[in-house]
Amino acid sequence: MSIESLIRAIPDFPLPGILFRDITPLLKDARGFRAAIDLFVDRYKGRDIGHVVGIEARGYMLGAPLAYGIGAGFIPVRKPGKLPYSKLSESYALEYGTNSLEIHADALGDGDRVIVIDDLLATGGTAAATRRLLERLGATIESFAFLIELEALKGRDALPDVEVVSFIKY
Amino acid sequence: MSIESLIRAIPDFPLPGILFRDITPLLKDARGFRAAIDLFVDRYKGRDIGHVVGIEARGYMLGAPLAYGIGAGFIPVRKPGKLPYSKLSESYALEYGTNSLEIHADALGDGDRVIVIDDLLATGGTAAATRRLLERLGATIESFAFLIELEALKGRDALPDVEVVSFIKY
Image (cartoon, rainbow over all chains, first blue to last red):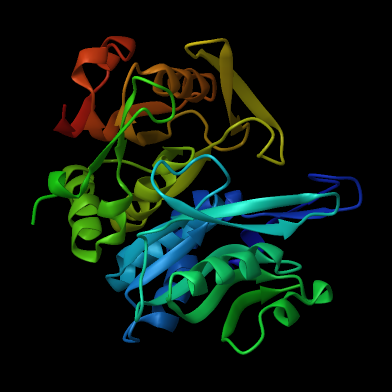
């Protein structure tokens, strides 16, 4: 069973010229979904990781089962206005303008060791903004984890001096 | 370890007069998170369920680990504009105006048996819209699953003739 064969390429989404990598066929396939999550679980189990941080929203679909699988807690990094409690915010650049991500101020503290997960590494803008949020809280990032990496966009360059793991590269 | 003690009440979010039930302290607590997911896993394992359908976005944080735990596939029901492929849409009422939810047209078909999960049952509007989406696809809803139920809002009345499970009632 090939995980890669369950990822669908959709032209011109969300904008003209972008080839979107759609993981929903993988998620809905019970064996494929388990195999994808187990890639992450097998990679990270046994390491000293207290929490998995997922980036909204596909990062939740992979990160919450990963947290469950390795016995960690789960922390959502969210789009603006979604978190109800005291929070921190960091901006990142879009093709036009900026957006931001938020995390609860009490989500993590000094000494916490975390994985950050999302479905796809493109330019690394959201991952780098998440890193800034976590460093402001004093947490240590053990690894960034992505199912897919678009290597031409050089997202790793936005994440220096930290482990970056991906399983499917285009 | 009490799951209920890890759910935080936040007054006046997202609107004045609403007491928001914040599950992020539960999610970030590794033992609490595992215990919460295992409530669902223990309830549904061994039943003939092919897919777990999660409602954006907290439904993903509970539904994806549930799918992983019982060996099912995972299907996201999303806010408008997020899904890249051919899709169906259903509207539901808000306090002012309406919103809608979408599902991929090829997510499910005749004979598929699913659980629908979200963190909280309030008026049942989003759950009922999700039910309409699933019925249009020919799927059968084995159960609705919620961590929390706000009983005064009578959300069960919006979900007749189907099993509705919740674990914490206010």
